[in-house]
Picture 1: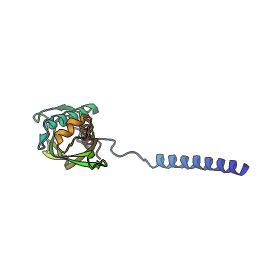
Picture 2 (picture 1 turned 180 degrees about the vertical axis):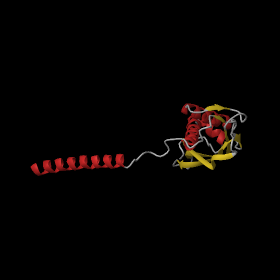
Picture 3 (picture 1 turned 120 degrees about the vertical axis):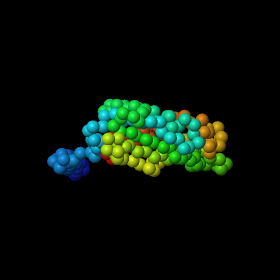
Picture 4 (picture 1 turned 60 degrees about the horizontal axis):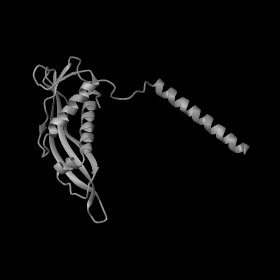
Length: 187
């Protein structure tokens, strides 16, 4: 028994020592998380975010995506966001380029029980003063999964969003957060 108790005390002391060494090394080397500041020029105060272009079959998805991106920028509090492209320091333009729905899993009767929706987009932030691209991603991909309801087929994006409005909410939130984070946090 005393040998086990001694071993436990030794392991606790070794673990505490290792933790202390790690904390000292990390604080001493200037370790910090990447993406803590903005790489945008200081003179950018007003960002225009016009309604995204919709090249998909989903009605009004561009309005929902645009509103989420605007809200995410506003939530960060550093920039004034307007829906215009005139009298702004930068313009964030987006285009929703495609939507695809595919079965993900099947029941024993070979009916789809779970689906995945994939949406593609391209987004660009352009400095109006210098007329140069500050950030762009021409091939953004977002995926969301959902359960089929009532055994209905849902290979049509319209049926997907009719079945699960929460999936649309999750997708637009993920889209807006990732875009704004990539732009503001220099990831």
